[in-house]
Length: 414
Image 1 (cartoon, helix red, strand yellow):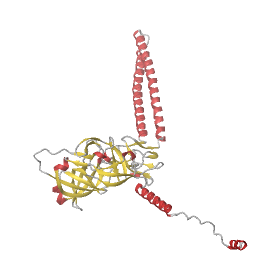
Image 2: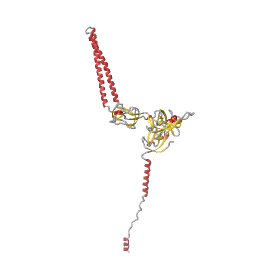
Image 3: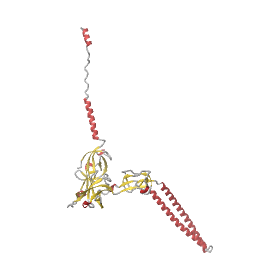
């Protein structure tokens, strides 16, 4: 029996102990999927490092807007500069250095370019030597004149003692007069040499081209090595100008008004200007002048409209030459019994970061210092720094710096 049981035990299959069930993998897959979705959502919200902000607007209360009625006439035109110059040199020469680029702001008198001054410098050295030579000749004549005067005095004494003849004294006196004439001529020669030196010195200074007024370079026409000439007859390879300088504070709008509606506008009339680039920005303006000439082909009259701003305040940097603009000329309301409210620029108090605000331009911000005082209903009155219509960023100010990319999450203009 034992042997049979042993045989049967040897023929049986040993399945071993039951294996533990394999761990479930779906929790790990779910965690990885949630992590991936969370990361994607984070980077989608975060964008390219843009700081999330809200946009608020600067408002204008009272002033010309309050004293004016609705629009009586709308006209289209373009922003132009009243003060614009093509900067060139006074002399013809080769450009040695250009110290400006497009978009650069320059101060009045700042050096913009230098021309080759080697020939003029040589002429200046020659003129200086000629001045020194004329002065040396003048000194020599003064010494000779002093000696001739002493000789004449001795001959006069000898003539009184009957030791010389009158002819000897006359010859001595003639020599004195000749030397005095030569001395006067030499003195004039020194003056002529000095004037010539000043002329050549001015020519040397003309090789340095300076900014005639403060502004922004909008066009750069020349490069080092090119010839520059104030005359257009310099040849095909000669430039007539180095670049174009624009005074940004002289920008205004020129519009064409149909002559049939010319009776609706007048000098000093209030207006509101909207730039095509910023259709929601109303810029307080005023009619500056009506050009007294009509365009026969278009039956229009050109009208100049200036932007209103505080005394000494720079024009907003968003206004650029040749921008399209639409001007609404406003009707004057009858004078009320009470005095009109003064013009005030108001900004939300939440947009103030210390003593500055963050101007919003597209998707970037720039810091601007302002001076404010308390107003009402959560607003501050802006005394300096803003003119009205600007968009300001509100958010985590500590993360903002000049030129930062921001993501506008919404608008809160009220």
